[in-house]
Image (cartoon, rainbow, N blue to C red):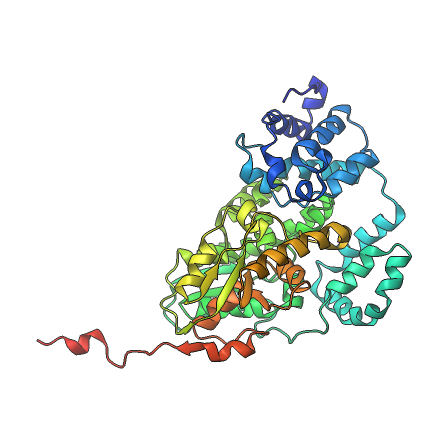
Amino acid sequence: MQTNFTPEQLADPRLAEADRILKRCVHCGLCTATCSTYVLLGDERDSPRGRIYLMKDMFEGDKAASPVVRHHVDRCLTCLSCMTTCPGGVDYMHLVDLARVHIEQSGRRGLKDRLMRRLLAAVVPYPERFRRAVALAPFGKPFTKIMRRIGLDELAAMVDLAPAGLTRAAHYAGPGTAATQDTRRAKVIMLAGCAQQVLRPEINDATIRLLARRGVDVEVAPGAGCCGALVHHMGKEKEAHAFVKANIDAWWKVIERGPVDAVIINASGCGTTVKDYGHMMARVEGYAERAEKISALTKDISEFLTDFDIGPSKRWSSIRVAYHSACSLQHGQRVTDEPKILLKKAGFTVLEVPESHICCGSAGVYNILQPKLAGELRARKVAHIESVKADIIAAGNIGCIQQIGAGTKLPIVHTVELLDWAHGGPVPRGLERFEEFVKDVPQPTREAADFIRG
């Protein structure tokens, strides 16, 4: 793509980065076939190629985002399916990140939009605030029709997505170290997350049990919190950097005390962001080098378990699992086969879901800010999942779990919960009726040495 930036503009490192990305696009249009919003809407402006043209015009003109640009960039899920498809390696992720910062800093949104975004940014990344909001949500459910009638669709979507009641508290809550009782073979830092530890604390518990059972110390560092993804994807750069800096500072103290084998993420949306810390902080003094090292250490829980011997499963089942590959995992991190391989090794029958590259509509808080499109994507995803006649659904991202779970009666759990169950952990919440289909694997009563004489 030919660009028309002036030398003065290219002195700005942001515009210089945008220029480099834009020049890689050759207008081939292959991205349109795998873009979730284009598949739904058929509007070129809601495809990666169309948005690239809109962003190029905005950047070259060095002007505030027009309502048209803002509208179509806002409708991008950042599912990154286009990057998996693109033969030219166009870095769409960082281009749209730059655009969102520009839109946030230069444009003027409507009052309702500004208030909703501020509300989400002020509540969701903070577990205690979010827990109180979730507790209040059931009181708003009788009024969602009224909310929609007066134009508060986003607020209604937020209430609808909230669980019916608060779940139990996590067994392993707060900062600290879960030390293995076995011979220590590794040490990892785990991101406890924000929304996940409120909506489904069992995920962190299952992760810690599964790792500690096989000789891995798991540390949750004091001072670490939200990964920053939520505000980052809203273009709120200052707030995102504050979260990133807090995590880097907290994790670096742990790293300085002794070797750390990995930073473990069990919410793939967070994982994509933490793996990008090196890029996000490349121009931030005092953080660039540490951020790069932390990004290199970061692994999704399925990546770590694939490279680490967790031993044979203790239970075997006939349960049929539809595995939903979260966009942030398959496109953002290019982790595609690892979760399915782990589930198969643990004794589950894993079913491939048709059209798995299309987003479920969660995408952070997209299902709140764009409820109509998100609802259509969920219906499409659920139809494909239910077509394979599975017993349960597994996914590696809490956003997908909440989004898909709101549209189907099939139970949905995190991949790591199933692995923990197969390796001796408790039955995951919502799967109690499947206990009879899971059998303990007979354990040998004698060691190999018992059969050797002499």
